[in-house]
Structures are given as C-alpha cells and as structure tokens.
Amino acid sequence: MNFYLILIFVIYILIAAFNYWLDHLNISNLKKHGADVPPEFEGQIDESLLGKIRDYTIENTRFGVVSSMINNIILLVFIFGGILDIYNSWASSLDLSFILAGLVFFLLLVYAETVISIPFSLYRTFKIEKKYDFNTMTPKLWIMDQIKSLIITTIMLSLMIAGGLWILLKSPDLWWFWVWCFFFTFSIFIMYISPYVLEPLFNKFVPIDDEELEGDINSVMTRVGIKVSRVFKMDASKRSTHTNAYFSGIGKVKRIVLFDTLLKQLSKSEILSVLAHEAGHWKKKHILKFIIVTEIIALIAFYISYHLVGSDVLIELFNVKDSTVFAKLILLGFLGSMVMFPFTPLIHYLSRRHEREADDYSCTITGDAGSMITSLVKLSKDNLSNLHPHPLYASFHYSHPPVLQRIRRLKDNKK
Image (cartoon, rainbow, N blue to C red; front, side, top):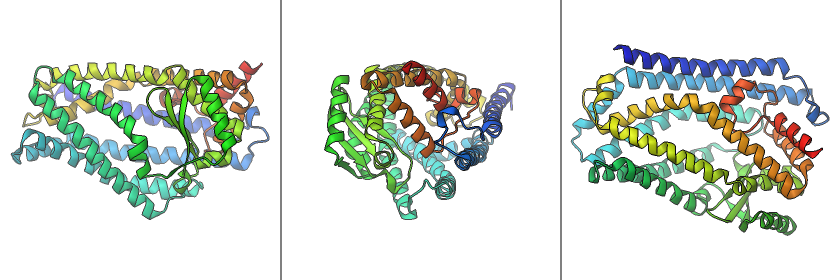
C-alpha cells in the first residue's frame, strides 16, 4: 500500500475505535449511575425496572459493537483486500450496456449486504427484543417483511440507478446537477406516495374509533395551522410493543398516524402533547430546514463527485485495474462517510435544538407542560430508554436531548 492508502486505512480504524470507545464510556456511565432513580421518575420506576433498562441498553450496545466490527472487517477486506478490484473486473467482463452493467453492479452489492445483515436482524429481533418483551413478530411475518422490503428496494434503487446513469450518459458535463435534481424530485415523490402505496404493504391503517380524541386532535392542529386529512391507528403491535406517532403528507394537509401501542399507553392529553410536539416541527419549519441543508450538502457532494469521477485518482489510489464509474462511486461513498464523521456532533446538536423548540411549542399550543412531561416519563419506561447516557456519547448519537434534560427543561419553563 502507498502512504495515502495507509493513511485512509488508519483514519477509518481510528474512527471505528473512537465509536467503540464512546460505547464503552456510555456503558461505564450506566453501570455507575444506572441504579440511581432520578427525582423525575420517583414512584414511576423501581429497582427491578432500572435493572431491566440497564441490561437492555448494555446488551444492545454490546451486540451493536460485535455486529459493527464484523461489518467493518467485511468492508475493509472488500475495499483494501482486493475484492472490489476482482468484483469490478468481473462486472466489466460481462460486456453489458452501461446502464445494465450499473444495475447489476450495485444491486448485487445490495443483495450481498442484505444477506450479511440477516443473522444480525434475526438475533436482534428474536433474541434481544423478545427477551425484553418488545418483539411480537412471528417468523413468518419477519420473512414476509424481508421479501417485501427487498422487492421495494430493488424497484426503487433500479429506478434511481438507471435514471442517474442515463443522465450521466446524456449530459457528461452537467450530470452532477441534473442527477441532483432527479434524486431530489424522486425523494419528494416517494414522500408523497409512501403513506398510500408503501406503508400499507406492511401495516393496516384504520381511522381511530375515538371521536372525542379525533375532534381534540383536529382542534389542536387547527390552532397550529395544519389541516388533518385523517387520523389513523396503525397495527404496530403485531411487530413490536414500542410506541410512536408521526405525521405524513406534503404542505399544510397532514395525515396523522398513531401506533395502537401508543393509544394504549398514553392518556388523551398526553397524546395531544406528543402530536403538538410533532406539529411544532412543522410550524418551526424544521423539516424544511433539514431538507434544505441536506440538499445543499448533496449538491456539493455531487459536484465534487463529478470532478473525482472524471479522473482516475481514486482508481490509482486504491489499485483498481479497470477504471469504471461504478468502482469510483463505491470508493467515493466510502471516503464520504469518513469525511462526514466529524460533522456528526453538529448535525445532532441542531437536531436536539429542534427537538427542544418542538417541546416548547407543544407546551405553548396545549398550555399543558405536565402532560408532555408525563408522556416522556411513560415513553421512556415503556421503551426502556437509558436515563443516564454519557454526555459525549449523546453528542455523537442522540438526535433528541436525553429524556432527563427534556423533562427538567419543561419543568423550568412551567414555573
């Protein structure tokens, strides 16, 4: 290996080691404070539940480390061990058209990644999640989900790959811009059709049968400026006991989906506070801001990719014999993940700030900070959330502020 290739290899190892060190810090912090009942949870959790939270977090973390190590080893062997070169040469030898060759190249990699992930998914679902009373999925349903996901992934990726490569052929000098436009438009299209085409393939959606709750939801959303098309209950309990709620739809007309598990666990006022929080994201334009920032970064990435794809610098650096666009894109993706790593705390910091703003908005629109607090307590208990994450770990991994910070902030604002 040349010096630069060794440097890239070492940097990747250091990033992985840093992430494992963060996991170690988080587990150590949990072991140190995991038996302490926060004042906000007094009377809500006992020693037995705290032990369950600690065990669930530790087991998930350790499993995540093992699976990550295996995936990292596979990736490093693929990139640095000559497997990419062999695979790229084989794909080139098929003598297919440019677009068909791209479809074969990328889809086979996706299928290989899917096969590799199957043992990890099975263990997490039927061992860890089952052990802690979360999993309600049958093996048959798991298999059906995998088949459906694979079919959808194949269709979506085929459209994106074929469209992107076609643009590259037709506009060799400006493909970076037109591919960005195509991907952006495609993602908006998927956001639009997903609630009506994709989501019903996995879950059943029925209108909630509580007219009073639906009326109160519409009343709160009207004050926010959101028009609710329908309020649905989703049969999430056939897969897991985890709870959630979400909005879908583009513009001011929203479709609200409540997990059936959420309806069982939270009171009416707590559900309204959770939905008001989600409405706060829309009112504060958090989603729009996120899309704008993401697309600006994507446009810059496409422009840089255009210059790198146009040269053989990556091919020569990684000792790949056949210069193909496909191999260059794989190497760009690998390097891009490393380049983005230092920005992870900033991205999560902005996300946590948006969550705090949405919490504040929920309290303002409902006038009921107490329900927001009790909903956070219940959701944390039901999901066995870690109450004592290490601050540095949270800065790299938490898109939401730790629950105790959220509750204490809401209490301070309530005074």
